[in-house]
Image 1 (cartoon, rainbow, N blue to C red):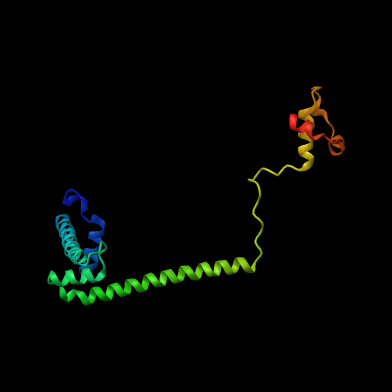
Image 2 (image 1 turned 180 degrees about the vertical axis):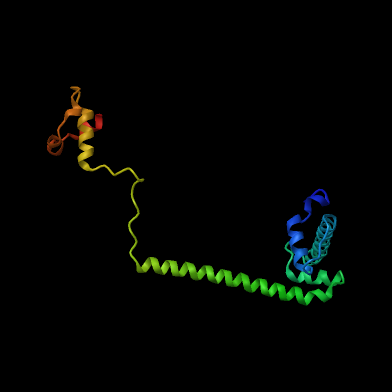
Length: 172
């Protein structure tokens, strides 16, 4: 928890935006007034939270729920705001449900598109690298096994036809 009240003030930009939206155009508010409004809002939120927490504790719960907030508002004598708070809560729940449904629809459409169009197989290697062929493996084993020092001169025809015993490959 915050040690002092300054640790929990609202951001000045948020307070300024709310003030601007609440007042008619052309009204100016000083920096000191904005700071005072921000502090008052912080104190109000703390007080409302404390009152709501009392209801939560009485109900032997650890989570504050909306009904705790509504009851706290009535205790603080802000009962005229409760209907508007309930409307705002319903609007919030509705918008959250719409967002969730839209996300589910996007996911469903994406899955449907993947089923309808055959997907390209994912590359098995990183870009710029290829999976070695059997011929490449035989060539590397031949060069590694050749002790004459001329292993790098092994011709391609020899690599294709030459068989290397398993014990030779294992000993390399």
